[in-house]
Amino acid sequence: MKTFKYILTVAAIGLSIFCSCDDKFLEEHPKSLYTIENAFEKSSQVEDQLTMCYIRLYNWFGKTMDPWVSTYEYKSFGTDVLDVPYWRHDGASGYSNFGTWSTTSSHVELMWNELYQVISYANLTLHGCEQENITWADENLKKNIIAEANFFRGFAYLHLAEAWGGVPIVDKFEENVQYGYTRATREQTYQFAIDNLVKAYENLPDYPEKDGRLGKGAPAHLLAEAYLALGVETKDNSNYTKAINYAQSAIALHPLMTSRFGVRANPNDKSENRNTPTYLPDGNVYADLFFAGNYDRSSGNTEAIWVFQSPTYEQLDETGGQIGSEPFFFSLVTRDLNWAAEYVESGAAAGPWKAIAPEYNTATFPAYLGGFGIAEAKATNYASYNVWTDPADLRYQEDVTVRTTFVCTDPNHSMFRKKVPIFMLDQNPTNLSKFTPIFVKIIPLDEWAYRDTDTSHQSYSHDNYAIRSAETYLLLAEAYLRNNQKDLAVDAVNTVRRRAHCTEMYSADKFDINSILDERIRECLYEEGRWFTLLRMEPDVWKQRIYDHGMFIADYSRYTLPIEWNLWPIPQSIIDLNVDAEMTQNPGWE
Image (cartoon, rainbow, N blue to C red; front, side):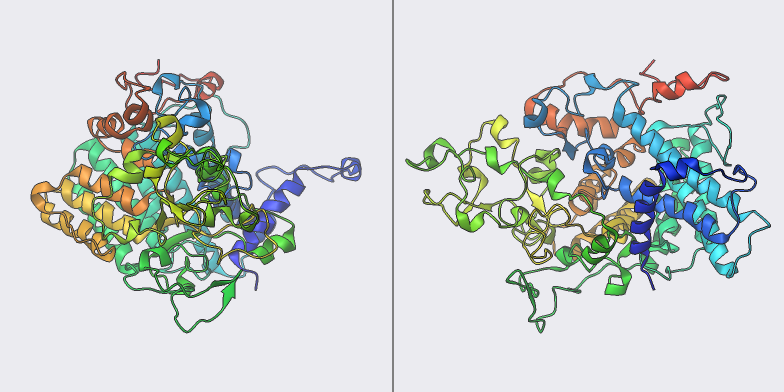
């Protein structure tokens, strides 16, 4: 049986083929035109529309076929955790330089369009399920497809409401272009998302039959988030009780992994890949969550609520496809880093990685150097260093879940083959802006997962979490905190911290909403859609965090003006197209 990840791969490639034409195709004369009324003749055509929802979000979560058009970075760029590195654009166009933002900003329009694209496919799926001429071999499959389509529609509207507030609600597929949409209120948009997510929760199975598909835990998690958002918007505390209940439901289905597991945890496994032993004796349970092969429930991973599957090497070979690599996007720029003056040596290069000995010429750059030297994203200093307050935290263990030192590759320097700590580097901000710690969840820390033929390492890919129950615990903590149950909120966060073997735990007297936002960085860095988290908060909360920790504000003082808006702007292109009704703009962007 073909796996779900294989189906996604073939579907994506098939779409690219479908979109191209040759002369023979142009000479064909179809007997009739497809319309919304006759487009569906069999159930597989409906399933194809649902698959497109998965594909759009698969790409959207950073595993795109082309990393340069990924929207992953837009979910966090400009926040307190991530930005375009200073060196890349000399600070002028960093996302936390809000003076460059406008109603025509490409990242705003791209995210808006992507979410409505998901809604369009979800609506088309639901329309197909309503067609009486279609025979379903399995009514339970039809029920699941309807529930999944409801989930995707709820997912999209929840994030639209978080980022833009009230937006037009499109609850059916429109065959003709519409020019008269009006905005619902933010409360109505949240409620529409909730209504769809409740339908998904009530009709999805506890666990999907295939890895990569949706089970009940996914809508439960998003319902916790949606009710939190609705509570903040309406000040109705009853929403927090509902958020608590749904978070607990998701956690019950998906308990945290608390001991080592999976492909690299078995001391009896004597296999190797590229001379790297499979068994990792110094590993930990947090790192195990992010090794290739450990993401899905079938690997024993109970924490995985929803996983985006990347095709295997074998599947990519069979289909002729390739997946762009995240190391390419998040790596540090080792080739340009210089020694601090006191570590410069006569006859050696100006930096630890400006000369590469033959033994490292074919070595995996993520393993030895941390990247390819053309990175487009960099974590803020706060996310990279300042937020890590407990040296026992498994999530920040050198060479296991994070790397802050890299092997010097210059044979003419006394540090050759030794790891270079950051204090040996030139401390000038324009130099250090090229350096950032590398986390195992983004870039593998050794060569175990590669294959010998993958010389460029551009096709390496691993699965990606859309939702883990560790994040659900942090939603639960926020719901408790907002519901005036601080002790329970502290316990929820400390449950996550205990799994990470932290010795410093939160106490109620030192606990507030920023405690949760800090813990989300430690637990969910590079996973979380940070803008969605921040924008559903009170503006005073998220703005202060950007003032305090945003890259250009905190590190280079590039932007000092107050942030005059509370929500992202409605793309001007959408307003201009909507000629049959008024589409109001968000305050601060008029």
